[in-house]
Image: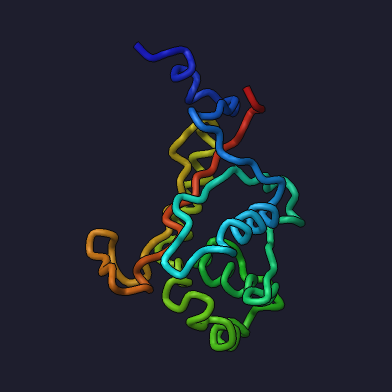
Length: 179
């Protein structure tokens, strides 16, 4: 038999989140998480890296979602957002007819080169994610996988930087409040 908490997983109300054995750090905004990542990596030796950096980010304030940096000014963020959404959202009027020129300007090796192309199947994945959260708010299966640009994950060549992406998946949930 299922535990009581499992039985309510298909109910229409979100489930209350309970931290796992080691609670993830919580960040008040994407900027706060970005700043923590920068701080965690700024004094690393050339042969060091930070592994498994993760946390929970509050994205309830739409004005705090974009994190502008010198490498990614607002125009670059807009280009990559609409480029990678693969048609999941309508293109804003101010970008119509400009995507090719913006690609030439912003799609550079310094900004990830081939790593920065996540379009493959993205519109369908977003629709599936939204459907999951709408129908099953307590689901742990609302995961957006980040596809490889040219190959499936079974055929990744680890010597090819474009195939060794940083972000593999993003987990989404509707939280009914902290337990």
